[in-house]
Length: 295
Image (cartoon, rainbow, N blue to C red; front, side):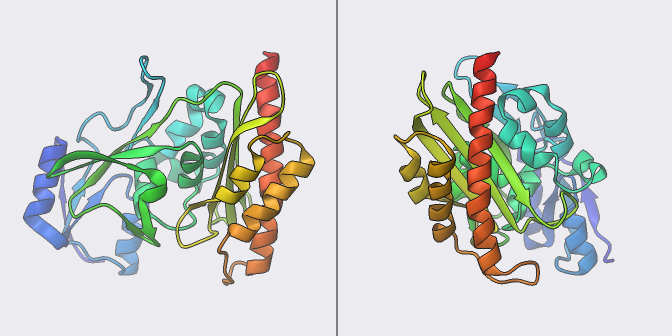
């Protein structure tokens, strides 16, 4: 493996400055679970690794008391999300995803920001956040700006990040009452494997009925980038949530997917699993909403 210099900036500005100084010969690194694999395989060969570990308050999970928005620092590890009582209770769709990313050892160091920036179509972390209408805060030499997460990905391994920019935070808007979410990673094994399909469903119901007032369906490994199934979302709004309506929504989502054949699974099978998973996760949403009502 090629030797490199490991730089440890103490602030975002210093990190950006170091990147600008070294240009294409530098890479940012957080947990390193993706970067080190790429270096060892020869896919990348940086002369400098710029650590983001000490650049600010980017490893916190908090709720803004004024807006109710959830703020997740880009350096928060998957294990921290998995073990957070706040995430498990109020955002189970995120918990569903992060508890099955890699092994415990990987989750202890791998960060949610790194998962998003790596931008592989099979990234579990992106799908629940897209279903939650999350956006990301990005910092660079021109200052800070925000991008809706659904527009963050441009292709496999490609994002809207410009050279030297850093994903600092993920922000999830406050969810309406009577909202439930669920995520399913479908593969040959429950963990330690890239998903054949990832499906996130979020449903909001009327106050006193099971009629849907808002629906979100996000799909991973169904296209070159994570996508929303907008036709299936529109279909569910105004309808009673039950097995039949969710079955139809699943069919619509499968039709909207852009799955393809690969060595890990054929397109027709992936399409079938989109349909089945949308129905299953929708029923899980309904169950979780009713459980909250009962408490």
